[in-house]
Length: 155
Image 1 (cartoon, rainbow, N blue to C red):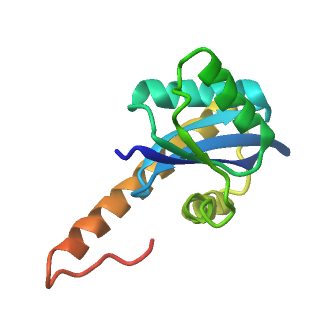
Image 2: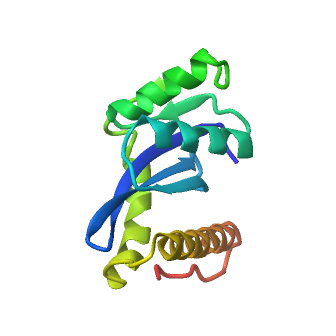
């Protein structure tokens, strides 16, 4: 996994209410981690970043949107020395296109399902969709590296 992370949050419908999905991908498009949260503030952003940093090595670059809670979460993690102050933080709108486009495939799959009824079911289903998407990307990447092979089409 890469050391340049792209972090974003999006929302899904659960019983007619919005819940938030925090997500990180590396510079290669690999999903690092995701977190489903009922709240959209600093606490779940900190929890998500701590979990992702614990699971993978610390990033050198973080690309975020302009959502203030993510920036506050990074400051909090830097204050407790969980994240180095040398990490480069980028907020350019053009740079976040990578993760915004990465959300697209997963949101297409979830749109077919309409709305989730149970939080735990939503979490498990999204984890499965993320896994299937990651496997598809790996299969496609391997096919592109081998000459004369067919490249799988978008699902």
